Length: 368
Image (cartoon, rainbow, N blue to C red):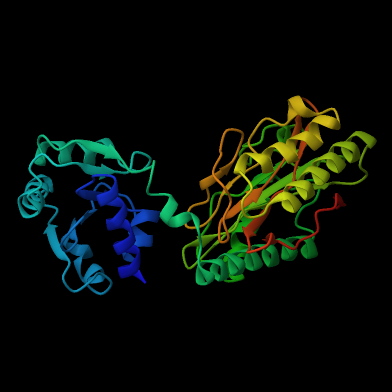
């Protein structure tokens, strides 16, 4: 699997006149090599030349684990803490012999530290962004990837159901307490990490789409937005539901109905051959016709996979055509300052003749 992915990467490198790609710890390194490591003060860069074996720069303490995963012909360039890492970049440069040829770098993932070391070790080599062409290799998921995402959705939904069954989301409990319960529940249900720090916000805090949980106690009459997801075999889920504590007002029902209709319209529209921006337009039109267009202040969705946010982005201006295997969220929302907000988010995969929604939890405005 990793060989075929590397072969596809190398074909694109040659097509874009990139003679080596420098992968940072993160989704791309995982996807192309199977190696998972975290970003730290110790640089770890995997160089993928257009021809020849991988050149892997890493701390010596990570070498045994790397050898068990990487191809047999991969060349490892290690360093110890007391030696520092600067000289190893020069060893890699000498081994690759690029001599002024272009290097592809991840503009969204590479730090200044690694960028400077590469500039010093590879003088005269232009550093070019891989983002214009590399994402196409990960946008279309295979059956195994979709199965991992489906499992991540199942785990996340079971965890949320545990909280609902236990009455964990109730007046008097703080947003932070509920968020902590949700994190523990996802681990207990089989999650292998957080897709992101869960958002649990109530009352006026729901008017900010990316508000963080706080020490504010939930109160009767609050709208409560919960945005959560977990990781399974590296793949993520990302779900949002909105609840109300106690009785809902007529305005809450109106905005929830508008968001639900937009969510359903976006899901129904998603199909092969449709431009990504059309899903955004269709969902947005529903909210605009309901009179809340100015309060829908973000894109309709984003790609989902090894990263919580990745291409394709479901946003105006994205003319990319949806293809079977592409996965993304549909998450319209309405946010009324001083009143509160509603967001409903589902995870969708494009199929041969339409789309499949992986999320199954009720989208109704449930009173808790």
